[in-house]
Length: 179
View (cartoon, helix red, strand yellow):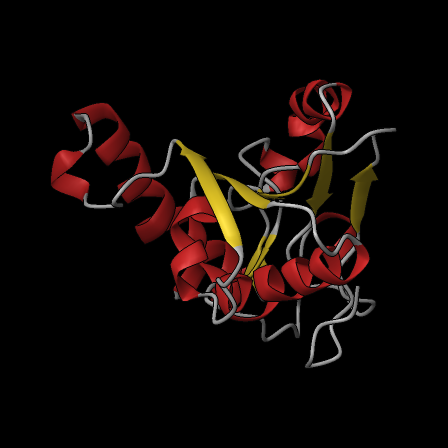
């Protein structure tokens, strides 16, 4: 699917024989879409069309030139990517009820979308406020290290967040992390 700004998003479409609804699954930031595949296969077996896709700058939606000179932002996910997937599903499956499933940022950024008409429901899980004082101390310390030491050093040295090599998460464009 091609976004209005020309960015191509790639994903997986699971098509049941007798669909009862179209479901857009918005993943968490820097999570491989394949992590969710068993869950979406279960939903497809229960007659939900499931669209599982990668945000711009990650997974199969990685830009051709890599991430070093990539200018994608975090809000692009909700302002550009999610609306594109919804338009695609609405055009391809008109008349079917439309649903969201969102994990983490995939649930948070639904609110940024300009095209929320015809949505019949949303199920979000592990969608936090991102407010550090509400986090357990151990997680707060880990995220402080990540955001104030690891991420800035990685961006300064490579031009993007190089996290995949360290088993932390998928790599991310620098502006996604900085935003």
